[in-house]
Amino acid sequence: AQSVTQPDIHITVSEGASLELRCNYSYGATPYLFWYVQSPGQGLQLLLKYFSGDTLVQGIKGFEAEFKRSQSSFNLRKPSVHWSDAAEYFCAVGASNFGNEKLTFGTGTRLTIIP
Amino acid sequence: DAMVIQNPRYQVTQFGKPVTLSCSQTLNHNVMYWYQQKSSQAPKLLFHYYDKDFNNEADTPDNFQSRRPNTSFCFLDIRSPGLGDAAMYLCATSEGALGVWTDTQYFGPGTRLTVL
Image (cartoon, rainbow over all chains, first blue to last red):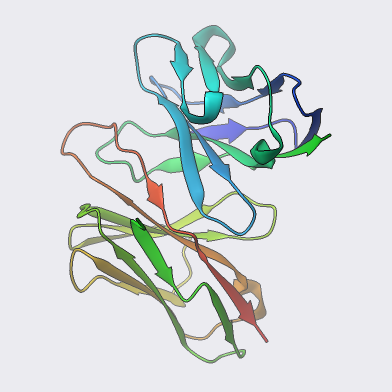
């Protein structure tokens, strides 16, 4: 079975600083990888996803992520964070069977932005 | 424009009193999912429908049931809520394209359930 590890439970970053959120996955085949963001009291919104091709993926809100097979990682980055980026970020890996039903989430990283 | 709508946003029920949570979608997606998310935890898949085909996760308690009367609506029934069932319940949808694993899941805002 697949699994996802997000080693950082909580990260605090100054507004305007760069950001990297770590994600490591375990899956025997080619993974389908996602980053979702959840604002307080809200549902999840897709930031970006990787299935194949270019290992550097661009997403919404200025985020990007890089798939590194050798490191089993899919870290999320943003060059300059804004106060509105404060939220919970979830990395997820999907099983490559039929449909999208086997989406396994990491435990999330809470991002706090300080002025 | 809301695409995945959940009602109510907040639900308070008493221990053991049945409760139903509602989800509707305007995306005409084939797949609908229910997740349970407890505080500071990852969403946990309870079950999903592909069209009318129901798929229950092995560790989903029998206390949780679901109905999907049509493409647009899906309901989560908790037959006898316990204190441990207090959580955010998230509904999501995806296209469910046959044979192609590229579907994004679109989430609703969630229903926060409190059990007294």
